[in-house]
Image (tube, rainbow, N blue to C red; front, side, top):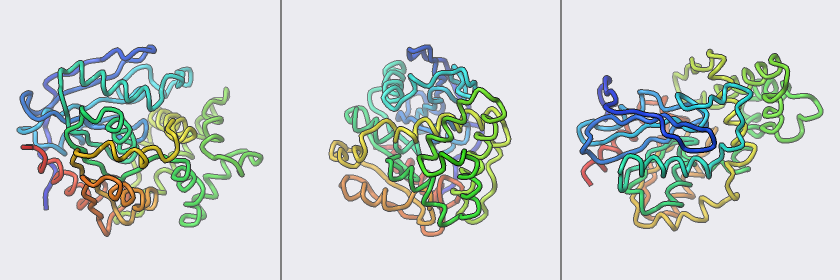
Length: 320
């Protein structure tokens, strides 16, 4: 089984890119400066691109580009601060940031790798700039449609009824029948710090539940950090309540623009937070994509088989 590339891959360059609207995006490059360019689009939104992502690529073959999306990680201003406006933090802005970073680094085309929310963003970017994308490697594939958001925030209560009841009941009673992403976003903007903190804690508690179907799942230690909780909850609810700021169904409808771009879609059959039909429908609409279903694993890279499949896909494209 293919394993992660060794730890210890350190950046040879890094910086802060001014992307406008008062935002500065942290970026770094690792691996081989003359290698095949590849960019990582992290999940969340709001997770940030930690060192783990570097190990998905062969550092001898790839020029690995990581960056923290607006408002998170080392980018500024920090969405963990309730005073930070999210008005200029939309999918359109993130796509423009990716393209500005490509131009800043003098890259022609690059492989785009993304998981979960990062898969949504990767598809949106690739459909907007297909000539700039040499290949796509996507895992835990999502489109962040209204139907998908409703599934995660409401329908999943059929699978985790007790935990979902707690998630719902953290919302004021009058708002429990509407959009829970909207309700949580309002609480996260409340002037009372205690209301904001409770909303961040309960949102992240639910996030940890609905990705917990993989064998050996452990709670995400990042949620122990109150600033990470607030940052993550604010950004996720912001994007989810607006269905990624995309026309519903547009990513699947426009998959034809990816013709000629090779791709690998890797998805766990036990991924109940992002059901596999999303990846399956995309593979049917995009003939150049290969669908890899991992029978025993769930969401993200918590399972060894999914991780191995992502590394193998990146290795396959390193010399093409």
